[in-house]
Image (cartoon, rainbow, N blue to C red; front, side, top):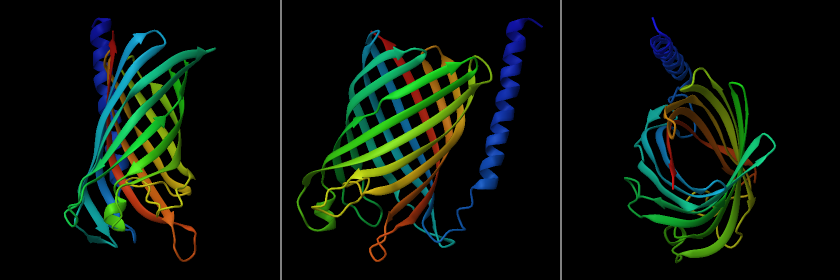
Length: 277
């Protein structure tokens, strides 16, 4: 058996073992019935396209969507919301190195659209400016990445439907901090796991906070734990399927404390393609 055949066989066997492990983990973890808050099954997709114009500058675009296909409330199956959100990012990015650490700083316009649910047909959207520097360190087969995401919301139309008000301009800031570790099993496959914390830093006090469609609420907003694979299809194209578990929180109007408001289990799929211009 030549080296190429041996590598292909090992890759296939390792990939099968990984998928069996991931599926088994999901089956033992996901219990949508046992929760007093909404417990959902969802799909989340980002298609990341980067175009390098020079060695330290480029353009990034990211279309994406979220979809809910399953929902339980207090052990009872409820009507799922279907399409949750459409997203689109576009803007420049800058790249540099600090020693052995690769640094990438995108600064993008971020559109978020929120289709109506089966119970509510109203459509809303918002406009945002996002800046999210990321740092990447590689050592042998290990890769550590951390990212600080500044999500600045300037405009939202949700308040027309919430309070009968017209579309509202304002400002809020949501900070997202993510750490991800990946280990390369071969040249084409890596195991990857990470955690992301979302925290509202600046709240617009002129209207009611509604993180997501509206302006961000101050304080701890959500946590996202994820685990999955990075599959390098070609030098410039990767597919990354993850299981992502998200818990969200909102301020209780009576106690003023943050309460758990939902648990969501995502199939999170990232397709990433790099172009050289």
